[in-house]
Image (cartoon, rainbow, N blue to C red; front, side):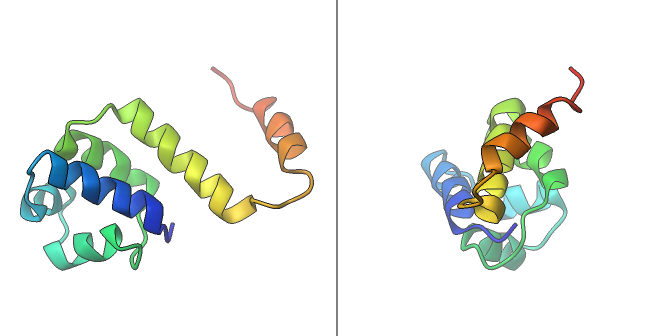
Length: 96
């Protein structure tokens, strides 16, 4: 997901909590330049990184995953005339 707003959200949280990039990067097993590009929306953040990001930043995993998935859906499908109907149809296949 190439996302400036999600990446900048992560950067804002990291800076607010005074967590250095190197600590977050270490938790994700990536280098700091990759993390920097993710925060700038120049590199893709994957769903598999969300748990590590939540842990490194002291965020609720559930909330961060919901934010990531929501933004991904909106980025990829915003403006589609049948998005709401497609999401409702998708909900039929999701089991709690």
